[in-house]
Image 1 (spheres, rainbow, N blue to C red):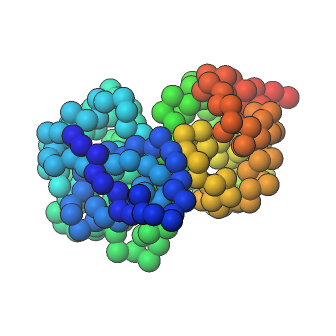
Image 2: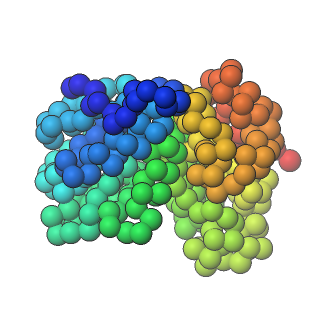
Image 3: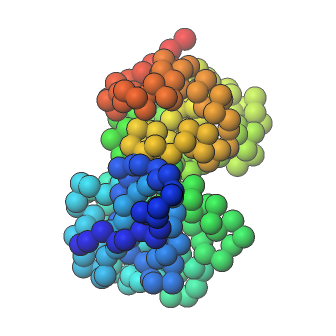
Length: 277
């Protein structure tokens, strides 16, 4: 596998964003440049795979932050194999797909059996949604450590709430407000708050703050993408994002970027803030 040259990555006169972000992609030529240009904007590097055999081999490599695939290039059998490989070697996955018959069976397999984030081509928000998905790629170790810390509390939530929260932590995508979560689960805000309290959580707001942190930890600690840009991807201001980090972790976003903290320590801090009273 070789790094794919990123368009305009070394253009003279441009201030390039530096990062350690890596994207492993299995995409048709007509969409490869779109992903390449977004990765270049984040200062990331990209490895383009020519066939499904190399895709399956690459999943086991430890040096890829995010896997970006088009299911129309895979068969259902290969998709099943991808799901099995991801269960053994977890990593963030973005499925970038057109809505067509060629992709549908593989899309269903990936949607039902993996924690992939889906971006569909041809919709009006395609570009912005893809930009968000490629930047907010949860750190695998952080999400696993946090969910392990709060597993007993999550188990006490109704599945309709717990499943949505787990999906948000796993994919970096999720509801943007507690009102939206209440609407999705058929509960009132007061009813939602009661469920969180019964499960031993301090508040739903802290859970949303924790999701934000898991979603943007990689972007903050492994790239120099401006913090304001990361905050906008999360749907908040830089000041609000900073307040979430200080409240949950005791450190500002810029402080974490300057001196990253281990994921185990971060998970422990968040778990305490989520459940202490």
